[in-house]
Image 1 (cartoon, rainbow, N blue to C red):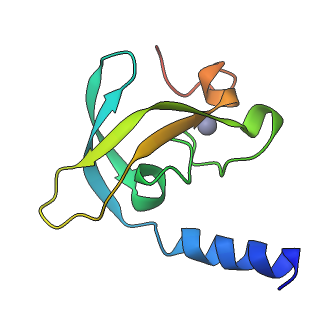
Image 2 (cartoon, rainbow, N blue to C red):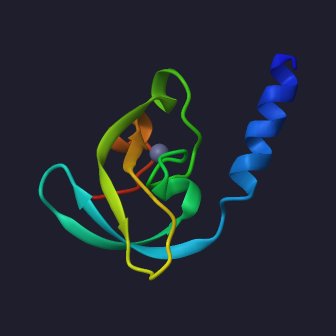
Length: 96
Ligand SMILES: [Zn+2]
């Protein structure tokens, strides 16, 4: 499998994780927020604020906390991330 095929497979995998659900997000700064997230966000594949996929430079991810599902049979989730753009406020997403 070449790089383009791997990327296409990854994009398809992310596209399959767009179901939105409510999560309890525990941020590393101690704040707890109820947030509506896609599964891809809750599993750490997408930025918590702008949903960009992890990349390099300003698209690089930094961990900000972890998500816990509020649903009954929710799948396992874990660390959640924000990209550098959002953390720096470039995108004007989150007021911290
Ligand atoms: Zn972002």
